[in-house]
Image (cartoon, rainbow, N blue to C red):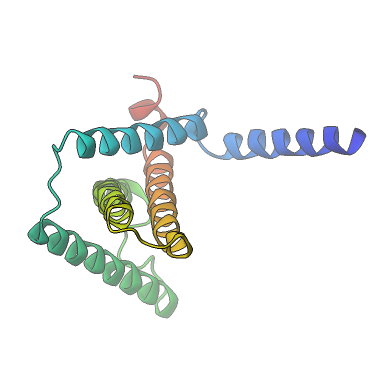
Length: 162
């Protein structure tokens, strides 16, 4: 039993240390924001408020690919030059990019829900379910990372104490 108590205390101290480095309550707000975004997408999808057309899927794929190219060029410029890439890592531009990342990652959840729904409807074998589950998990992690990034880039006064 003592080993478990030390793990719990080290986990709590890690959480407190991380909270001291970033804004107070940012972890709770990130989880609540991710849960709200996921629930909103699931409800909108179930009520058929989101229509997954070929055009929407194409636009979403193009936007995701553009985001990957933008992030790659930012990383490349950061590695090759002495300045901070394209400037998307801090301040207002970073918060704006985080918000755009959230707006891009949340609709991707509906794509994965549709993939799961079609797989079930067409009787996909159980051994293929890992691909859909990993895609959904990856998109959820992407949404959480963008929410966390945005909350940490915005000043405390602006978001957390309104």
